[in-house]
Length: 131
Image (cartoon, rainbow, N blue to C red; front, side, top):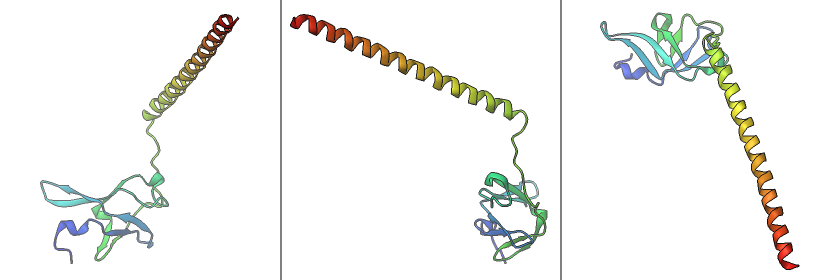
């Protein structure tokens, strides 16, 4: 039996089908009632959670706590799709990065042409001095 709340940290969490969800990294506690509200899993199984994004498991989903935690419920798969308001920002950022890369490439090409012209001018002057 667990005697301290910190005993939960690091415990393995399994679904009721025996699939590993991950290890408990932190607990979500309701400060007024001082009860555990949920388990925080920061690197869950990618077979259960898209992109292994962190999840919070409500405490009411727990079936048993012993050496491991067994859940009585967990969705078959948790999708973590981008929110609609975030997608345009991501597209804009990608466009800005492409534009900056293109501008940098143009500046490099211009600098190379300038350097070549400078070398040719210096070579021409050296040639005239020798003659």
